[in-house]
Image (tube, rainbow, N blue to C red; front, side):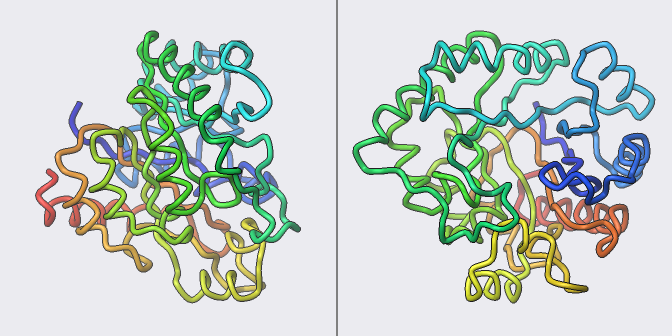
Length: 299
């Protein structure tokens, strides 16, 4: 598989706060995504969850179904129970021809709580990583046997947020479990996304491209905002995340460290579309990624 550009619909309609972009029809999202130059979409709350209906929704726009977020609870249940809970989502991805599963532990996460500051995010006790890693590895082996690669999404407000968390995750999971490298979450979490790309190149099988507004990130840290407050921004101010080329991430350096890479590069820059209109920002992100990949020799 060559590199393909896709999008997450969170740039049009927010999944955690569904009134943000709630008035945007799915058809408008898909039409604008195609106009911006995307070939595929990840799933969001407005998408049908039955294969026939989903294919019918995507077909007029010639869009592939890339993947979809799955909220895991492996801190509370074993691999057998997780596979049972995962089954409908996994079967939908298989029916759609998707080959990656976006997977994140959310049983104790706070990223969906508008009022809870990030300083209250969960931390894994050192002695608990082994069991957690073993459970994820087992689930990853089982999904791989069905043709779908588990890619773990490190995320603000969860147990895998910081550089140390990511290192612990990678060191306690087996080769079946891969990493979704998210430039925005890495940067805000204190990691260098280019270093992550170098360190874990062989196990990076999915890529989320978003940029970070440094002044908003520092303000969110200083005032201990919640994840969602930082994403939305205060008042008329724009939020912490934006599309590639509109923030502080050095995409040329990241892509140089990532090559060779084969798979999807997904623009997933959640913003309030009333402040940051979806289509112009999407086009800006696509243009920047194409230029950065070319300069880095990735394509």
